[in-house]
Image 1 (cartoon, helix red, strand yellow):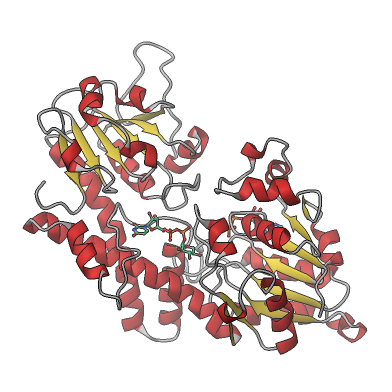
Image 2 (cartoon, helix red, strand yellow):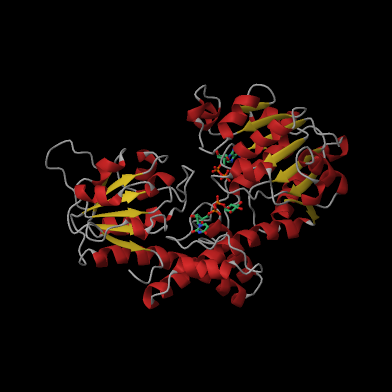
Length: 470
Ligand code: UDX
Ligand code: ADP
């Protein structure tokens, strides 16, 4: 089947970059990205390319190149489904808050809504591609909604194929991950549909990197890949605590472990715990699936990865309180970085949220800096508006303020805590910066971006994750 028109439902972190790359690599295909969120679409269409709804290196260049040519953003969901040969579902699948599976299973209401829309508005044979990460056997749900809803039109040629084509892009390197993928995974039942999708990727991905599987293997492979990556982070973070207790150094241990080719060196950086929209959600999904199929030992194993991650975040806030004499009430702490990792403005599940909330609860005043995250986003994540000094005697306990300049954020601070590995933080001259701080001043480096050799301990006390010499 020759694909000429693609419609992607969901203009978020996955849909936006993925479709921009497809449009850039396939000038013969028209790509329409649709979303119910009008404000988000307006931003995608914004003349100011610095104002796109997501920040991703290399993305604005692609949008500039293709937008208005073969890449279009709109809220015309029905019309674009109607025109499409292939529809990608890239909508949000957050963890369910209520009901059966609450706290673990994914909430599929947005995916279901998409399937109903496709069933209603498509007019011919349509290939439906699951792009969002979904629980295993979701394709069955989609298939049955499509076929039941369109029951009366199936004979008229309005038929469907469902494929699973999970994304493996990491935020901050999404464009590069899409242009040079380790693999493209396509799960499906119909060879013709699988070929149609692989033809698209073959415009820039070598055949050898395209893996074809059945639907369920593809869905499970995506969940498992994220669970394996997250597991490595919890493993190394567990060892970081042992390093601090014994005098070992986590960077040396990571290097020694990672030099074994069977293990590999990536994803062995100890830090404040993993964040991002995928890892926790996908592991909890795996836990739910294991419980559902009566496999409590498997569920327990994977749940341990999330428990360790929560513990690592908790450990860091407790440690800050302990080093500041067990009391941070009214003390100013500078938070460097709020995004869940560098090179993104995304804060979903960011360790900074839990750590900042713990410090606020202890009564600290946080001066928060991040080069890409907005103060509005931080307010929403912390559930607390920032406290602006409108009167000279504004309350400082248990409050926070956004500060645009790092130097300003450090004035009179008792401590600085690095939570995101933004490159600009590793360039700060801490011996100079500490002069602005209240003594005894502390620098806590949860990301290991500061070289201890650059720190004069007479000027500033220094702690970094997994450093047993602290
Ligand atoms: C992840 C997967 O990498 C990607 O394949 C999948 O499609 C979506 O989920 P992402 O969440 O964007 O991508 O970021 P990733 O780079 O994987 O980092 C996740 C979290 O782990 C971040 O908080 C990061 O800081 C942390 N991390 C990563 C570590 O703490 N140590 C490491 O060594 C690597
Ligand atoms: P992801 O990280 O998976 O891309 P996001 O939350 O960033 O998730 O983006 C998902 C997008 O999908 C949101 O912008 C949301 O408005 C959109 N969306 C959800 N359901 C629908 C729907 N039925 N039709 C159109 N857009 C939808």
